[in-house]
Length: 231
Image (tube, rainbow, N blue to C red; front, side):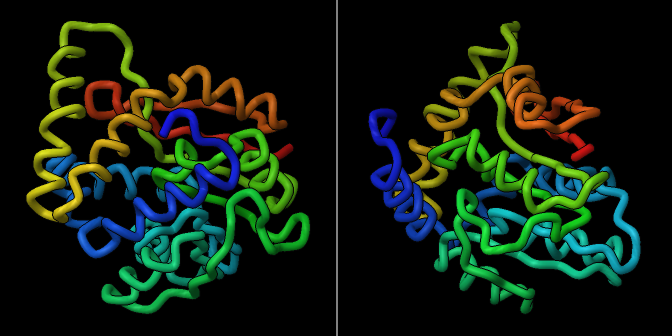
């Protein structure tokens, strides 16, 4: 998997999420002991949404972030976009959203369309991080906010051996039992371990033009919520 790039990587990732779409929400709850719900609430709160604002939930998956945004601010104009049709269809079971099948590297929106863009567990899966950040920057209006909820490499510490054991062995085992696809749940932890540190992602965001960039770590440093603004 680590050797795949471009279209090959995109096809592989799409197949992974098609395989686990029906069990995605349940596995998120099991893998995080329900903490992912709290992280989404915090992420949306940091958007500081106002009535009438346009929000893009990019990599929306089954729609958890979009639904949380509508719960906190019902009067926004939401678009929930994802390149995995299987994930969008799985999300329909929890209620309809304004869905759009779209690629994070080629967003089908004019420049300066949204006041806010949010993503949850998307960025580490894109084939070209620089292009994905550039697209989010492009579709934001000046002063617009961008929030990223994502896994991150934990800092060295006493908990690291336990974190690695959980990611490399426990998650694939649970994933195999629940979804029947242990291989997909080997990819997900592996992609997390291979991804950037929180500091590195913040640096990439700044290089893409975002300002007021910051982040908070969660869950023993394995999760980070990043934010930034388009000046």
